[in-house]
Amino acid sequence: MESNSSKISQTIDVEHDTIVVKTTYDATPMLEDVKYAREVAPDKFGSDYKHVGNVSMELVNVWLKEAGVQWHDSKAVQDVIKKKLISGEFSDLRNWEGTW
Image 1: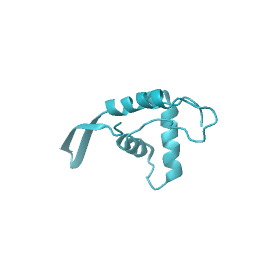
Image 2 (image 1 turned 180 degrees about the vertical axis):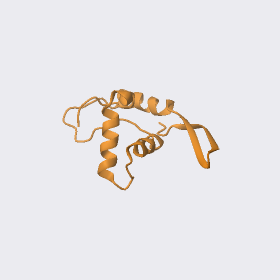
Image 3 (image 1 turned 45 degrees about the vertical axis):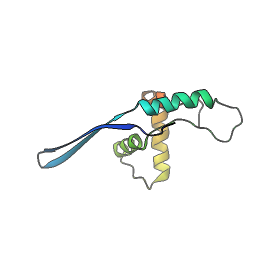
């Protein structure tokens, strides 16, 4: 089972004395991992450990930049990931539909 999205392309441009790096990823492996996790790790009542979803580090990095959160602030990182996974926009990345 692969755990990272695949980089498709990367372009580097200069716009008004600013370097702009645009990287495009294929989310298919991430979505396939979530589908697999739903099939083999069904929600079990009473478990202390829950695999909530599967998010590539590249996507987490984008979310943290959008939120203005630094990686060393683990509580804030946890909050950003939780909010994004709870939002309807990224529900396909969740394999567990419970609350936490």
